[in-house]
Length: 432
Image (cartoon, helix red, strand yellow):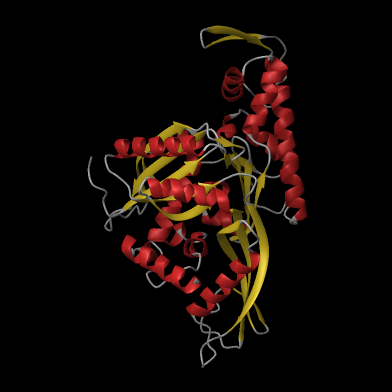
C-alpha cells in the first residue's frame, strides 16, 4: 500500500450500528476548485455500542479497525491521524461567560488574551467526569465595549467572552482515545454529528441567515442551531431512526431487519391510499398495508418534530430561521420527510446535499448516512488549513469554520502535522 501523503485527510464516524471512515486529500495549491478530494471510504458493523455509548470495548475496537483498513485499501494509502465524532445522549452544551485581565502593559488585547479567556470558559464548565469537546465563541467584550467579534488590538483592562461549550462523558472520550492509540492513529480533534453534517452541507448565505441542521441517527437525533453565522445551540435528543424501526416491527409484526428495509425503501409520510402490498425480502414474501406503515412512521417522526419545535421556541428561533431546516442521516431517505418538517415547523425544509467536495461525491450523495463522516473529514480539512499564527488550544477550527469555505483561498498556508502536534504539546504543557 502507498505511504500516506502529507496532505491526507481522514474522518471517523463511530455510530451506534456502523463505523464509517472517509479518507480524502487536500486540493493541490494550483487547483482553483479548492475542495478536499474524497479518495476512499470504509464501513463496518458496530455491535459494541448502546444508545451512542460504548458497551463492549473489543467490539468497537474491531469495528473501528475494520472501517479504517477498508478506507485505506479503497484510497490506496495509509493514515496516521484523523478527526472523530462524539455521539450519544451524554453530549451536552452550556452557555458560559468568563473574564480575564488584559496581560499586556499597553493594555491592548492580543491573541494570547483570547486564548486565556477561551481556556477559562472551558475550565469553568467542567464537572466531574466531563470533558470539553469544543467551544464556540458568540461574543467578546472589552470593559464596557460589548458585542465584539474580533477584540484584537482594542484597549482596555478586562477581556470577556460568552461561549457555547460542548462537553461529553470523559470515560467515553478516553475509550476512543485508547482505541486510536492502539491502532497508532492520532486524534486531531473531536466533533459531533450535527456539527459535522453542518460542515458537509455548509453554505455561507444560509448560515448567515439562520439554519437548523437535524441529523437523525440510529438512537439519537443531533441538532445544531445557527443564527447570524454563530452557533446558538447543540442538542442531542434521545430518539432516532431505530425508534421508528422498532415501531414498525411491533405494529406490522415483522422482524427488525424487515422493519428497517420497509422504513427506508417503502415508507412514505402521510400516505393515504388504501389496500395492501406484497414485496419480497430475504427470500420471503412480506404483505403489508402501506397506509399503516405510513401512520407508524409519521407518528414517530412527528414526535421528533415536536422536540425540535420546543427547542426552537425556547431559543426564540421558531419561524426565525430563513435558511430553514436541513435534514441529514439515514432516516432522511424516508419519502416525504422534508414536507413533514415543513408543515410541522412552518419553515422551509430540505434533505441535506453534500457540498464543497470533489472525488467520490456520488457515493456520499447516494448514501445519506455517509454525509456526517464527510463533514468530519471537512473538520480535518479546516484544522490543517488554519492560519499558522493561530494560538494553540484556542478551539481553532470552530472559530474559523463558519466563514471558512466562502473564503477558502485566504487560508492556503498549511501548517504541517508536526507543527500541529507541537502546538498541542505546548498547550498541554501550559495546562499543567
